[in-house]
Amino acid sequence: MNTRRNFVALGTATLFTALTPRKGFTDDLVEETIQVSPEDTIGLIHPELHGQFAEHLGSCIYGGLWVGPASPIPNVNGFRKQAVEALRALGVPVLRWPGGCFADDYHWRDGIGPSERRPKTVNLHWGAYVEDNSFGTHEFVDLCRLIGAQPYIAGNVGTGSPREMRDWLEYCNYPAGSTLSDERLQNGAPDPFKVKYWGIGNELWGCGGNLSGDEYAERYRNFTTFLPKLGDTQPFYIACGPSKDNADWTQSYFAGLKSKRLPDGYTMHFYSNSKAVATRFTEEDMNAQFATFPHLEEAILHQRGLIDRFDPQKKVGLMVDEWGVWDKMVPEEEKAHGRLWQEITMRAGVSTALGLNVFHRQADKLVMCNVAQMVNVLDAMLLTEGDKCVRTPAYYAFELAKPHRGKTAVRATPQANPLALSTSASIKDTSLVVTVVNPKLGPFIRLRCHVPGSKVRRANANSLFHADLNACNTFNAPDTVVPHEISASTRGETITIELPPLSVTTIEAELAV
Image (cartoon, rainbow, N blue to C red; front, side, top):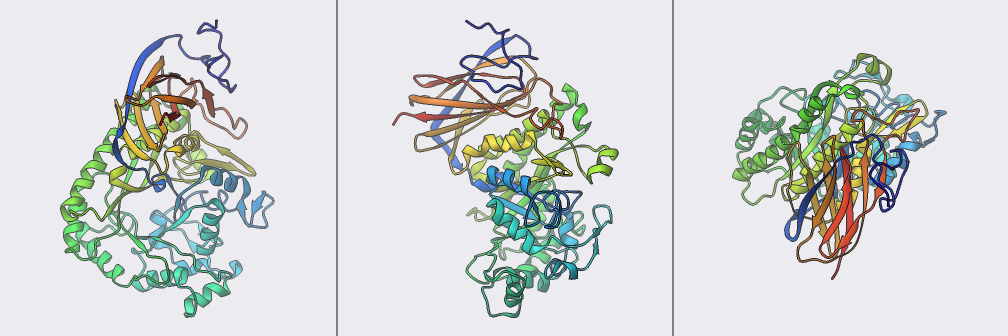
């Protein structure tokens, strides 16, 4: 019989029934129990809660997603082949573009037509570099189709006009016969793009125009007056909400609407900031960042309550369309890789999973969440350099959360504590999914997941973990932090696993009928 000391190295994928990957960890083991209640439902986990965001910022678009069809880097019609394959495997449900702050100085006509004729423009917000606009609306829609995502366009309110956004909508969605739809055809797209999600500006309280909530409400009313349904796609209009839990913005915005044309969606932005460099976190730094996620959950509850005062029928969907970890930047790294580039470590992967668990637990209050950002910026799924592309621990956090999509969230206790286990659970028919985040550096936990009233027929589990909180996947060592299959034993109504320290673990179980 194996003792807790003869276990293999972390880099080896093992079946937990025979071996437990404990090298680098302490030899301690504690007992904990969580309870999942399949009958105590919360709401549908919309796939859009796992949405993504890509802005013209740093090397997210240029050099990250888009390398151009003439690039020696393997590509699919100009899109980095490795990125396309990784994102398609992740099943990205929705992609927000072109910003971010960039959106409110982006004029869509600059990004259509033959690439050699597109104007060169200055990116005001992210370094004043010159864009060649080779990545525009057609390229964005093509990318969405390649990876299977719904397009979400953030329109320009800051320096744009209602006419400009109205024309963009017609260009994208009108089937044929108008000058704009025919121009789309001439540019290579005979069929409409059928863009459903339209953001009416971004961060209007800051980089989008430094407006007050009631000033933005006037702009919103004005812009949406000229944005009807054009074609077969019913637009879903998204209003700019607050930075974190700013109640004044929300109250003044909804009061300023004067009950006219409530938005379909209302966004909030919530970053988990840190003053520590990504790869130099101490345990104290880590715990401080983890402690931001209860504040995120509180903000969702508070903002939903504020909206409901103006929207008692709950027609307005709350969204968190920018979120994720934002660590202290290293100037040398930004110079080499672009603005807001940071390594994504094991600690960041755990942080990302904490956020996803929040969204699952509040599934009845949310319709979309978009992590910032997809490639090479902030809480990135992928990091690229030359022809290299690595999947980050944040990518794997999303991968482990993927089985929840389309299922109904159910109560699981205990739910969350910044320094204790974080759980979320969902069910569809007899299929149960439980994600458990262990934010502690030690010890191992023998976890019993009790499902009262339901016999568990079988279960399997996969876990992302590493003994070093600053471990990351580098271009020379791309598989340092990857998920491992671990054993899940079942007996009656209980699933038992051994939960590694600092880990993200998803259990998939089949319940008896």
